Length: 203
Image (tube, rainbow, N blue to C red; front, side, top):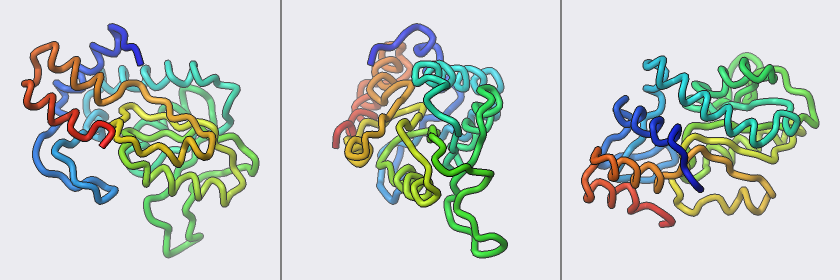
């Protein structure tokens, strides 16, 4: 995927917002990783947040506003971005809970959802796809249709086969390869750190 100057500036801004950490981390999927990307922190930096939302909007325009009816965020990180995207595109918004409620209506899917709606699923990062797989199951149980998933960063760990098998396209603003190469080219990370970022590539 080619990367333009706006994306280069965005990657630099994300880095200066301290989203990138090196170490030994357990991800939400249970997978261990030598690096961590904390996109939840972006909401605390209005200018960077605005640039990130714009990058999502650019991708949505490529997908086509007529190609979906509802934006579905994935709790909790995906909600940071799916909610403003819903507002800006005038599309209905729902979200899938991380855990099903054990009280009240015991919903997994929150918000009004009309059966047969075409859903654009929005999250922050694609790693193993476990959260997205759960979301697909919930949307399917509610008679929804999914053709596209949109994330900011694809960690490129070759775990999107379940999407391919279901004819669902994974759309992303940039990959971890773009991220690593640009940060290295800008002398923001060392070659060793670049190799750490790329160590999980198509693992």
